[in-house]
Amino acid sequence: MTDLTTFRTETRAWLEENCPQAMRNLSFHWEDAHLIYSTEAAEVWRERMAGKGWIAPMWPTAYGGGGLSREEAIVLSQEMGRIKATAASSGMGLTMIGPTLLEYGTEDQKLRHLPSITDGTIRWCQGYSEPGAGSDLAALQARAVIEGDQFIINGQKIWTSGAQYADWMFALVRTDPSAAKHEGISFVLLDMHQAGVTVKPIGLISGSSPFCETFLDNATAHRADLIGELNKGWTIGKRLLQFERSGIGGLSGAANKKKAVKTNPLVDIAKRYVGDQDGKIGNSEYREKILKHSMTERAFQLTTSRVVQENQNGQTPGATTSIFKLVGSTLARDGAALKSELMGAQGLGWEGEGFEAKEIETSRGWLNSRAVTIYGGTNEVQMNIIGKRVLGLPD
Image (cartoon, helix red, strand yellow):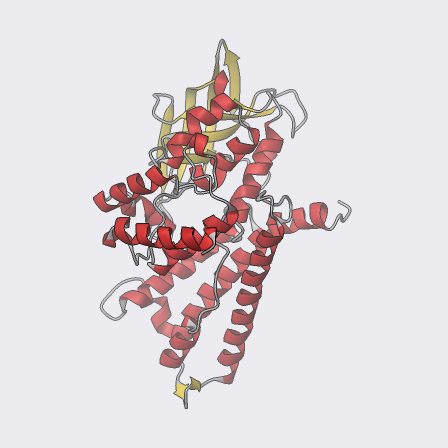
């Protein structure tokens, strides 16, 4: 028996014994994750997984990670998928600021911040966009002035996902207003539980409020929580976005190890709402649409898997993450739109007895899918990055 086979056997037995039934076979949108992770079952599951280091399985054990190899992490992911176990923790700590600290943080910063990510006790939010600095992020104006061993920060951030639940924020702030546009920006971490931070959720057309306005009025960040050099935060800020886009695009961790499924939900929906003729969809136009989408989706899954396998050092790719973010978000949007289209009028319901729960979920999913092409950098921004940084096209 190989070491990997032994690891799989032991992992399967441990998961079966320790994963609460209430944390299996769950389906929820990321906007509702805070509700799922606030339950007693979620807390038990989080503590057990943190004890193994499996909330961040490939991170170093010195910071609370599991220290697993990529192959072991893939096995863990597969075995969790086998029993349909929900991840013990999620959020920007694991997918964004954690990997950034591992690459750019000092040893002191790693020891202070990473363990609270690997045990799932601290939640993070992102302080990037501002009312006048969205896609043109380098136009940000939130100002940080050094006073002693602190930064005094004033300004406003917007679209700060999950800020109403966050304990800490990683933010880009302007520390030298006289410098060139992409200079004079610093990357800092600040505690959200202070008098100088005010959070106001923004209601969306989808009926939820995952995004917020965040007002910083003499908020403070410690000099010890400056990541990288003063006025050199733009490079770090861009690298964090690559980690984010790799997650949206399906390149993060072992999650890319998707297997081909024997049934296609689009086919099942089409047969019910469009019609079933001798076991096939009763409309040639929809057959072609579903075939094209399914082939593109499967090709995308195989490509992400290949890229991760080729990248044996485990490092997140650079500008090429924009390709996966662009294609992945477009697929998600188009898939949601096609699902709603197949349902016809039943795919347009918001509430009421005339619609089944799955139909309402489809309608709201279509609305939510539009956001995927915006957050993490709009599709238009990704195409600019691909043109300049990947293809080397002139400005």
